[in-house]
Length: 143
Image 1 (cartoon, helix red, strand yellow):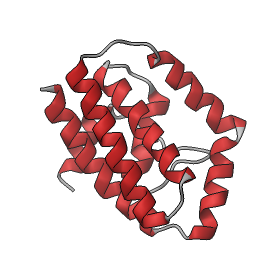
Image 2: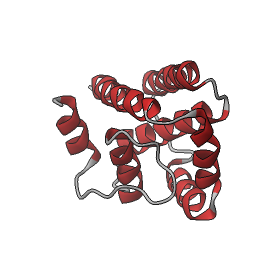
Image 3: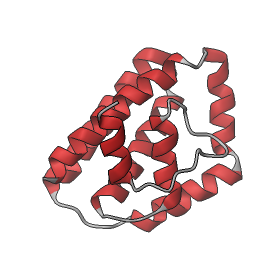
């Protein structure tokens, strides 16, 4: 069941990511990376990561998340030619998947996903939503 849910998450994330990547120019990539390295963003990212770090999941789920991360990395690299941006985005989808799999209700991670689903690469202030990740995935699945 969780693998099917991760497949759906991957599908909606992929479509939104393609839109987001079409909207940035090579010159914007450095700005995006700088904004993500700013303490206001990176501290919240690390806090969300530490909340799931070391949590156990079954091997099949772990392999699926690794596969999703790799596909996202390759897609981003092919579109942008950047090696840094794909690593950040791959880390983001890994973080989102980990929170989703562990049913963790973290509004910042949900906002991270919501920002992607609205065709934006998260940096600085995220777009806000009151919905759960599950609701967002269901909503964007039918867009």
